[in-house]
Length: 327
Image: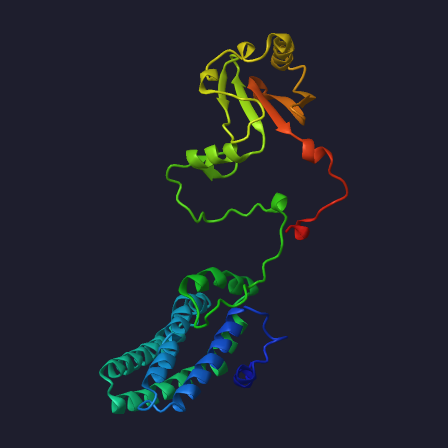
């Protein structure tokens, strides 16, 4: 761990820290800090004021580096009984913050002498604190914190941010988990206001309506009293429906020649002897697949879903077309 400084300067972290590891990110930021300081040293602030100001503002984002240490790293160190960084180093952060603020004021006033003098102080202070990080703080943190501790860092780090233009690699690198095996409960990134909790997930009435509208199937739902209570109004329905069907007995919603068979299906569903009935027909030069599904709650019949789908194009599919071949 005593080799941190040399490794930070050479960016030789592979084998010591995986991509995105919080310690690696701290060290990579130190490389960026030193690079920005080097750029500023070689800018003539009087001749190239705007460029100096732009680079210095980037350097001032070291606040994120400090904030992650104070709000992420220090609490973990305290958990293991090491409290001195929270006291001494935090005070040093505040001292650097104050001097960065003074440079910004000098930049606003275009006071070249103050800019140069205070900036020189900032560079010395930043180098001192980076030396402490690399030789003492981070090596000791690596000894104290567990792998699980470091894994917990990422969420908090994301909320605070980094000095980089783009976020560093996630740590640990996300492992692909098939949706059927993903049981992790996550903090929801949306409000539950106006949403209904379904078996899995939450939807607003408008979202439910949109789902039914864009499903490429005709759906009609008849309740346990044989009354039609719902149908989806898609743009290209196979069999026309109108609002007058809602509340109507299902036996009046089918042609006389087929109503007997429909009633038989309902009877079998209610008795529990059948759960599915399916048919396929030619209709207006299309191949239509029609299915009826019994709906039950704890074994009690609650109605039937009628679903019709145009499978003309599906029926003639052959071979395979993979997701990556989509164009």
